[in-house]
Structure formats: structure tokens, C-alpha cells
Length: 244
Image (cartoon, rainbow, N blue to C red; front, top):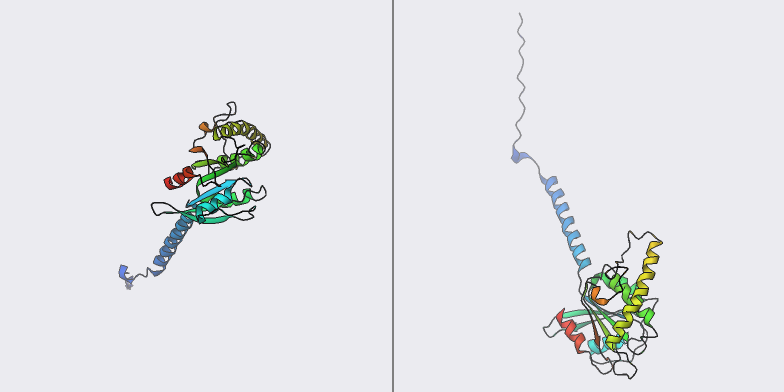
């Protein structure tokens, strides 16, 4: 019989050293770089470094801002844009201070713009006109305290213009606001019931709907203090800023 000679097939052996890992390394480098960029972008986006000066028009925000940052109070007018400056603490740190316009058509826009960068809130109240403006004062304050972006931040409520004869005391203002906040809270709850509130950025403020609102119920540091920007009597504000 004729023998069939089969040639044994030999496969070339591939050595690890001969493999080209360049595409894999490039892909890994791109993924790693992307993760680093995303991490830095997110960190930059969520860094809280600003103190927001908030309140209604004519509460004295910009005058106090000017006094605190520039060292002298200046005649001011209704702001149509934010003022930004830096307060230097006794320890040499610099705090970014943002004066948010108090006009009702502007304050919501600028508060939303800076709320995620805020580390503390300063809320100014005109102690002379507070009774007349109590609804607007309470409504804007409720917006700040109930917003999930600022719900846990320290807040100092400055009852300004205490140098004037008709000024209400900080304890009287606190009591007035607690009563008005009950009304604002009920109005907000009714509004949320009429729409889909699953994506609402507003948290419930207080202990429960059946219990009258008190500032002590809010899980954040809130202080009412008297001050006079005109007479440069705002030592508790500077102490508050030093503590941040």
C-alpha cells in the first residue's frame, strides 16, 4: 500500500513580548483621563465657597456689603446684577461674598445661579418696614430654607436698621416670621399637590403640617441678630464669617 506522508502542521508560537499592547494602553489611558476630568469637573461644580447676602430691596444688603468689603458704606441703588467681593478673616482666609439682587424679578434667578456654590447664607431684613413687607420677607426666606441645595447651610438673619426708632426687635421679627411661614408653607403645599412634585427641589420645612412652624424645628443653624449697617454695628456678622 502506498503510504501517505502527512506533513505535520506546526503553528508558530506567539511570545508575549511580541504582542502589541499599544492600542489597549491607549484605550486605558483615555478612560482614565476621562474619569479624572469628570471627577475634577464635578468637584469644581460642587465646591461651596461663597457666602450669599440675600434679602429684599432696601434691606441694606448692598450698603452692608460695601461697608464690609470696601471699608466704607456707599449710597446704593436697587441692584440689577450681583456684587462679588472677598472678605479677609483675621486668620488670613478669604471668603467670597455675593450680594444677590433683592428685586422680586431678579432674586430667584441669581439665587438659583449661586445656591450650589453657597457655604452660608446671610439674610437681611429691614426692621422698620418688616411688618408691611412680612409676606415677601417670609416667602423669600422660605424659598432659601426649603431649597434642598441650601437646606443644611448655616444661616444668620440680620435684623438691620436697629438704629432707627421704629425698628422691631429681633425677637419680635422672629415671632412675626414664624406665623407668616405657616401661611407660606400651606400655600406651597397646596401648589405642590396640584402638580407632580416628584422632582421638586423644595423640601418640607418644619416638624409636620399639623404643628405650627418654629425656627427651632429646622435642622440647620439659624440665628436672629440685631444690626445696623449705617452705624457699622454688625460684630455678630463678622464673628459668623470668621467661624466659617
